[in-house]
Image 1 (cartoon, rainbow, N blue to C red):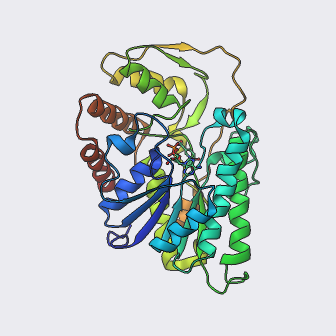
Image 2: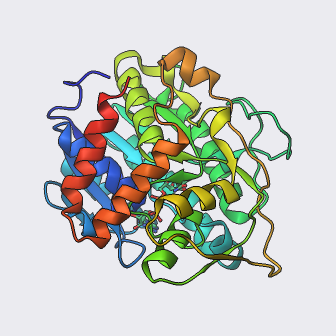
Image 3: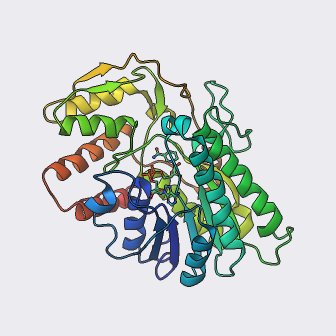
Length: 356
Ligand SMILES: NC(=O)c1ccc[n+]([C@@H]2O[C@H](COP(=O)([O-])OP(=O)(O)OC[C@H]3O[C@@H](n4cnc5c(N)ncnc54)[C@H](O)[C@@H]3O)[C@@H](O)[C@H]2O)c1
């Protein structure tokens, strides 16, 4: 990446109060960008946004992505050159009980962001964050490629497939040189999944569930101990997003479209591996029980083929899964030890940046 690229650029991040948004906001602040955030309050208590004092050094605006007029006024007032859309209802199980809210937030929220970009002249690059779950899941062993069909069994996964289709229609209709718009905006989508790292307290997510339990000195209920997932540290896809945005900025529509950012095959490991590794690294260990309840359907095996981002962007994951878990443990140890979490996170970002 170009160290100078982000200096002085105005970047609007939706969902900056969330897990990924907090890490991205800190990282872009460190790179010298003027970060403007638009989101609801942090989704959990505690949360990385407050624990890491992420708000200091950025313009944080409280607002709902479903409110188009407000969204548009934020873009108008702050004139971002780059928009990164992360805000979403991101939970599969919650989506089963709240499908309307999930579709309104994830689909109409994406429409509102793209429409706000369309109705202003400032934005040069827009990146829409969806999920590995956007694909029609065939429950097979091969990785999904960017040109595989969209799908999604549950409302969350499906809403992300819909957000992909919305983005594709906006790109073709308004933002490509051959579309109706007389100006090109480089628009891409990014698909990643099973992101782990310090600072996540999200509901029904494995690592937050485990870390919360060990910090409260109780055992944790595990739903699918044998399920294999492609785990990756949160800094890996964020690195991919930034790398992609730099290319979109320089080469416009050549890099627009969908992009996968996932780990290598060697880091697709069962839930039980994560459990036993955390058990060996966390002082006091992890105690857990199998959750035998009748849980709603969740995709069993989902892997991304990342040949496109490796070949065309030169992006590749930098951390193996063991180092990823060590970083997670270091983060929560720092939190328990009441360290300055903004500084600790900054150190983890610098360490990541120094890797080849
Ligand atoms: N964490 C993962 O493993 C993972 C995997 C795949 C995709 N994603 C995607 O990455 C993005 C960020 O996920 P995360 O893990 O940081 O989630 P998170 O729950 O930690 O953060 C969600 C953010 O969206 C904001 N938000 C939610 N509803 C909103 C609304 N109606 N209006 C404005 N803001 C709203 C929240 O305030 C918060 O800032 C999401 O789009 C999610 O679907 C995450």
